Length: 225
Image (cartoon, rainbow, N blue to C red; front, side, top):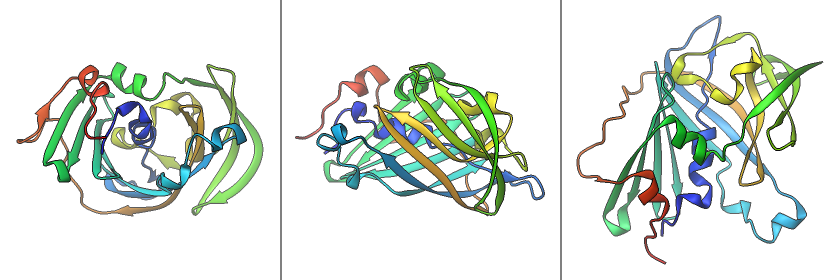
C-alpha cells in the first residue's frame, strides 16, 4: 500500500515535470514522452531496487500548467503544477482502499520534496550530438553538495511556463537529456517524443471526493502495511 511520500516517488514526479516545444513549431499544449534511467552505486544496489521504478512516463502540458501521473503499487500519484508560480497539487488515489487524498504544495514544499538540491556552474563543452531529432550540446554542472553531472541541451527550443524545468533556469538552453539527484540516486531523463494535441485544461483546485491534508500530515501518513 501507499506509504510515506519520503519514498522518493513524489520527488521523481516533481523533477520530471519538464516539457518541451520546438521553436519552429511552438507547442502550447501536448504530451511529452520521456525515458527514465537510474544510476545506482554498488553500495546502493542492496538497498534500492530500481527494477520497480518506471522507465518511461508521459507529461501533459497546457499553457502554464503540467500534469504528470505515476502508478506506484496499488496507488496512483498525480502532480499538477503551475509553472508560473511553482505551486502544485498532489493527488493520491488508492482504489483498493477506496481512498483519495489531496494536498496543495507551495513552491517551498515542492523544493523540499525534491530534496533541496540546487544546480549551478553550467559550462558548455562544445561536444555536439543529435538526440530525439534535436541538435544538442553537452554541458557539465554541479549541485550544492558538490556532485558533478552532465546534460545535453539545445537552443532550438522555446518553453512555455507549464513546460519548463526550474532547476535549469540558469542554463540558457533547454535540456533534452539531463541528470538529477533524488535520495542520492542519480536519475537520467531523456525526451523521446513530443506530440502536439489538446489536453487539459488543468487547475490546482481540489476535485470533489478527496480528503484534504497538509504536506506535513501527508508525509507522516501510513496506509496499510
